[in-house]
Amino acid sequence: MRRPRIRWSAARGLRARLAVAFLLVAAVSALTTAALTFQEARKAILQRSQDTAINALRSQVNSLAPDVPFPPSAGDLQHFAYQLDGGGQAQNWQAYASFQNGPLLPQRPANTGTAITPELREAVAGKGVPVFQRVMKDGRPWLAIGMPVSYAGTLRAQSGLAVYAELPLTAEQANTGALIKAAERGAVPALALSLVPALLAAQGVLRPVRRLRKAAGDIAAGRLDTRLDVRGGDELADLSRTFNHMAATLEENVIELRRLEATARRFASDVSHELRTPLAAMTAVTDVLDEDAAALDPDTAAAVRLVSAETAKLVRMVEDLMEVSRFDAGAAALHLDEVDAAETVRKSLQARGWQDQVETQLAGRVRALLDPRRIDVVVANLVGNALRHGGAPVGIRLAAGGGRLLIEVADNGPGIPDEVLPHIFERFYKADAARARSEGSGLGLAIAEENVRLHGGELRAANRPEGGAVFTVDLPLRARDPHADQPCPQDGEEQ
Image (cartoon, rainbow, N blue to C red; front, side, top):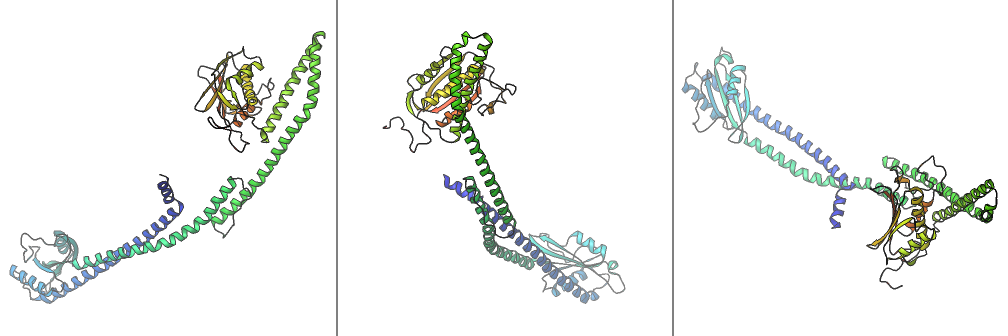
């Protein structure tokens, strides 16, 4: 089923469109030239036939008219017409005569028509000069000629005598038909020959376009040093120069961004490592002070507890920063183990004393290949976020199906504002700009998302129709270590 689509795509490609456009231009040019040539040739053929017939009729009239009595009788008119017929055998015309706009003589049989129209007779009587008209009779073209005849001492318009002749234009029609056939026979080879320069022109345009497409693909694949060979000075050459300039600028910017990113990661990692030792000492000191806080005066005890709480926050922030730096450096690794998913969630709640604050719906007998430590971090961050910012009761639900593991953490709070949802997993993002400080570091949800993504899953945030926010962890039951060469074994495979 894919081959017809490939052919259809090729038929709609730039090469086909250029060739068709070239052929259309050639066809229009050939047809226009043929039409103009045919029109001029047809006009010349008909004009020659008309002039020859009119001159011959005039010559016959001038030779025979002096012998016609005035005024002529019907017999005289018929005899005059017969004489004109005899003299017009070369033109194959049928002659008629009329006096004082009377009937045409000789009269034709009732079942045969004539090409002499009333309009032609009126024009001859009114203008007093020879008049001709091309008409169709019996499906064939005819030439009708009308000519007034003058007697000695009378004007043509006053003599009342007129002669008419009709002759077929069959030969002329055959000639024009031959011209049309000749034009048709010549157009087909011309179009066939024009296909060759059309394909050559299309090839000349497509070659640099293909190079540009390949270079753009190389840039997209990360080969930022890709450049095009500039040839010529046309628009396509200008496009190649612009592409090279863009690629060079992009390469410089990416190199600078990578340098800044590496510097920032190294700075965060170095600072975090440097803070661990003094923070460990501060934590030990605050632990000792916490134990003796009850024996101190109230003001001193409050200060000790404040320092202890802020030190704990700083320790958590440093740990989160170190975790983020490992994600950024690509050093985060999975340590997979086949565990009971429900038991893993339950232990995470028990370790923090949340089992009485969280309603659970945990499906049993769900075995999954996961990193228990990272799943514990995900559950702790989501449940802790719901307890701090959501509303009771907070619930967690675990289900499995279709090779996927779903963990939902829901609360009954005010929910997440619509303008916050797109940024909920960004680092250090605060839903309320006025809330400059909080108990968290602003990295919890970002770290949770990174841990879920490391398992090959997805973390989603939404608002429930009945109120409150819900976070959904969607994981494969058999996760794969992205840093391993081989995927972890699936169900039913030997381990």
